[in-house]
Length: 312
Image (tube, one colour):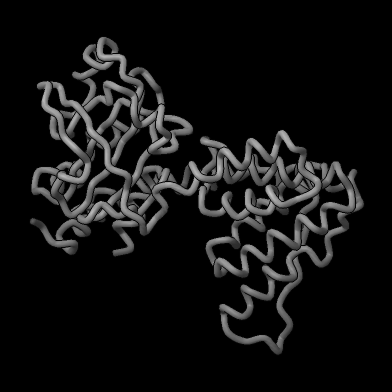
């Protein structure tokens, strides 16, 4: 078994350039975000008598919408104003405690209720940024807080509430810090295995679909990454690539595309999908687990995974 320090060193050396390229790409993409299209909303700044970084952050978050006119629909529905304000607000979510976040979500929706179109706009944008599979800000943890509010809101239709009530328990599965749901898989040799019996300091679950372009990009990047492959070869990480849709013919035809130092497997009976063991919004869906199969990162993507190891 390799140590975390060795694992970290190998990854940082080989991944530093890749992550910096990704960051540069995101900077370039940022020029086309909503803020570039219109006037920005400015959240209040903390008064001079508030000291300490945490206190300042909490002040900005709890007073974020003080200067926002929830009745000015023309301005709010302008992409560069209302949407960007929501994006900036979501950016504060990782910086505040869960109770503060919950209270903030309740306050902003309560304020938005004054105008139905504004309420629906906020509801849509939170879903778009926190739940859409292609959003880099997606987070089941944060979207769960939104759903809990919407389920109890009189402004939400009965049909929508039913949808949210169905989604919520699925969303709550496999949270960071909980033990990942066990499942049985079959390898190319016909051997059956279970997630819980895999032994490694870290396990990556890589739910994929043959032919998916995003999957192929992620596979190619990891396949060509020397640090990642060194850690795999030294036993620090196991990658369990799972095709959850059960089509054995399609899976067998694609086997040569999966690196041979990964565990390439199929869920022949589609238990993962039919029983909603894992929420797979899009492929690839990536989970990072520790040695006890507790979830470290849920529905993640490669920069987050690399960032986690660089933070050890």
